[in-house]
Image 1 (cartoon, helix red, strand yellow):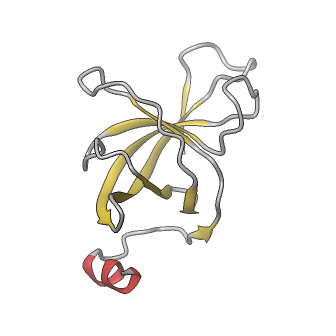
Image 2: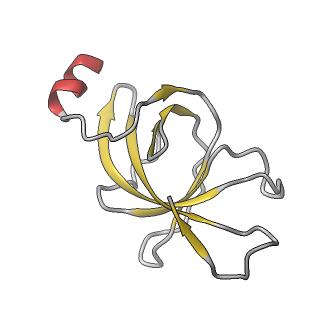
Length: 121
């Protein structure tokens, strides 16, 4: 299946991927999308993207989401949240989906930055 994905989807990455299994939290950022909190584990990640598997079928190409990666708890001050876009959703066996995200920008909530300031990645 991995070989099929590699041939089917050309590699558009600008930075290398690392196989890393870390928890993440994904939530839709657009009001038109039904609210959910998905808590998958990453399969791989780079400076500009994250790939994970999920059972949730509501992801679609072009969907904007908030991603906390890595995620430990909702109150961890070390959490880093991003705005991301779903660039690929692929069906997998056992009613699962592979989801590829492109990280667009970091949402900075540090105490040194005024509220509402966003830094681009």
